[in-house]
Length: 154
Image (tube, rainbow, N blue to C red; front, side, top):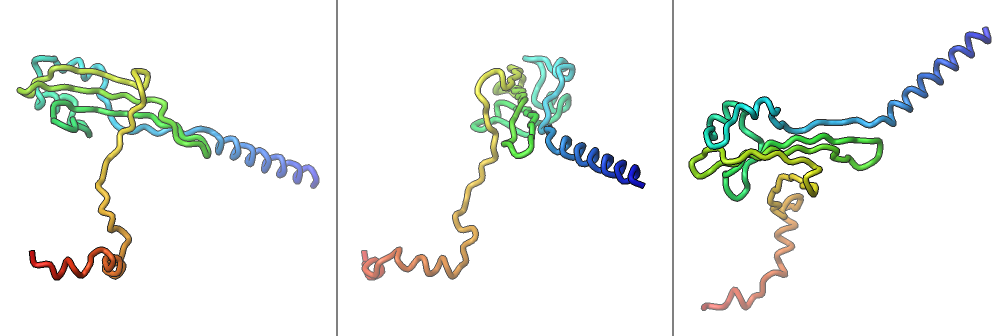
């Protein structure tokens, strides 16, 4: 009977040990899409157009900010390890540039090793009104004007 009890304890300890070891292992996530070199080989600089690039490798999720002169395909691999801050361990950016006639003028590939880390973020304008009730806004405006402004004719 004692042997059965010891076997259950050893099995329980092994399961707990395995759970602890699994909890401390890193996990990885992949984000985005960058076409493979084989697909890029089908695109000819100076010959292909924006439409043919879209047909060959698809539209990207990002385009040029100030002008639509380039398409950016971005992929990244992020490492998550227990309570540490997530770490981007791999990032690839493929830039397909177009001239004024929408013909491919350049194809460049960049990675983390090519320079500083660039954080891509979506910028959203904050209205500043979020979470503030109508009544609070009304009461808050009492000190923002003076009576002489109401009576001024000109």
